[in-house]
Amino acid sequence: MTSETGTRATRDAPGGMFPGHAAPADELALIRRMMEQAQAAAALDGRHLVLWGVLLAAVQAVHLALALAGAGPAGAYPWVGAMAAGVCGSAALGFSGRRHPTNLAVRLYGSVWMGLCLTIVLLFALALAGRGIEPAHLGVVAPAATGFAFFVSATIAGLGWLRWIALAWWAAAPTAGLLAPGPLAGMAGIALYLGLMALPGLAIMRRGKRP
Amino acid sequence: MPRVARGPLDDTIHAQARLAIVAFLNGLDEASFTTLRQALDLTDGNLSAHLRRLEEAGYVEVAKAFVGRKAQTTVRLTAAGRSAFTEYVATLAGLLGLPLDERFVR
Image (cartoon, rainbow over all chains, first blue to last red; front, side, top):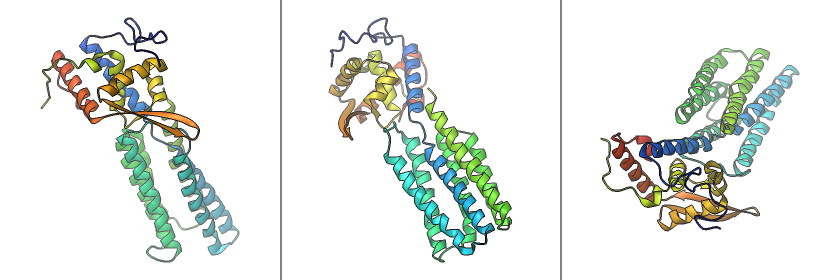
């Protein structure tokens, strides 16, 4: 460690990056700049959305293939594996890698999605056990709840385009209720998970990497 | 109603590098030493010296921990640090005849 005016450290010497003192207007400009940098550093984590979007699209494809092959109720089993893999994967992502700076917005965003994930997994388990909710109803409830999570995320993060994603999820909920189970519904599900979950996740990740 | 401070500028924060550190930390729960160094483009020694000064004033808390085999230093603004920063911004705004921007207050 060097002294405050050590030999290595000259960037905040007068005339350097941080001159000793500046005019009040320049100081306010510096404060604004640093606070914007802090906001950019506390980037939202889009990796979980990519993980779940790809995972659910894949299991939807497997489910569709099994249904077309006449697998019957056995087609539900891959969903159990996908849910378990998603929860484990999300936990692994959360604990791995270097810690990114957080702020209130990042914590709220994480809480909303964790809450949604646990709610859907709980409803799925109840549906599987034949209690509380019909499996077919989950296809309507899950998109509606996902739309809610995107809508809240849009407000928390100040990302207006996420509201359009929320609206698309909300539109998907009644559509899922109207579509009869079959190839069309299966293909629509795959497109939904990739286009409205994995892709927004990628966009959020790219935004986080921006300098 | 906008707050207008009347006191003189806080000497501890008045140095530009320390003002930048405090302004950066005010927008976060905490930041690693590396994140701070990259954001401020300061040398390790220089950043350490400024952090020590802020720590002595009670404006920041510096914690060291091992993540795996790597030592990680994290820095967070204390309540006193946030209060001093808000007061500093209010004083600046007062000097310029501007209302205090609520975004500066957490």
